[in-house]
Length: 225
Image (cartoon, rainbow, N blue to C red; front, top):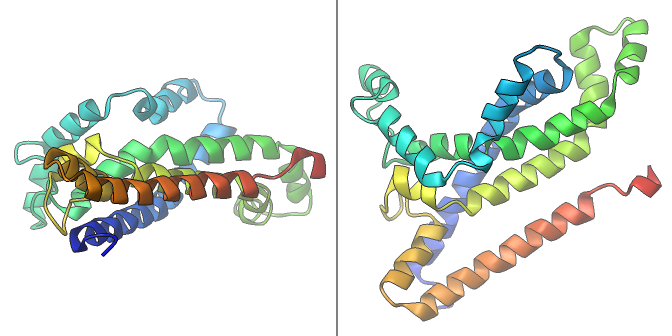
């Protein structure tokens, strides 16, 4: 076979993780991006810096603090245990939580830029037509910001697929549960299974190229707008 069963398993797990994280971030990141694009609050700078922090923070640092927070003695870990959910580290949903934090800026920043590009004028026109703020958001702002949402979705999905440090810190290396494609490649290299590593890495390389190609093809041409 071109790929082993464990390789295929890791790819499917990676795609599932990226899909869930992208969907969650669409729901969570959109209101944050809207607030950052519209607010004049003095808190915009600090909150924007917090949103962008994963861009410069080493993944091991973020993973460590998430591990402590979701561990048995952490506040989130104690809460999940009290609710009967158990501990999140070394589970699929632990990976989801970690990936949501790590990919947050890849969703928020493109959507924020798209909302800022919409400007005030279309919303003012909608208000003169007696549209409520909610109606104006869904009927005016969202359609005009659609290219930003496409960019954000592609970047978030691709970034989640490529994660390594955070998912290894939070999920470990459990086959079928937390062993994503990047960790599977690391396992092949560690075991000196270079042929298997080459094949899986080639799949990920092709996937990454196609994602970037889609991003550039879907990006609107300013000359045509």
